[in-house]
Image (cartoon, rainbow, N blue to C red):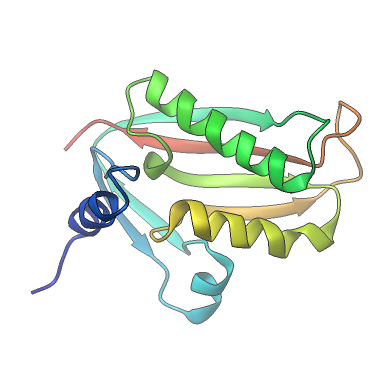
Length: 149
């Protein structure tokens, strides 16, 4: 018997003490190859129904190291999605990540795997020369789909 992504997310969420809720809309992740799984992104995310939420670029505290900034950003994105009626990060369908040091890309992937576990958002990783605020190492913007079927 094949399980839907929603069912899998509910099972995983329950096994983690309910920390990972399934999105409230129909979401299917297309990541058929090892490279997509290895780098923690989907080649495509298909949604049906729901409301599109465009997430503005988020940065962390410049006093924190890279990992601290990444975790703070994902916590803020989760909080923002919940504030507008969503389930949180499981509702994300795509993200654009800006880093100022290409060597940090692998660490970002590790953290993203830990946070999303499966059914990763589509993603682009772009290296930039700098950010508007000194000390910023990463910025993430994205899109989520909430509600619907």
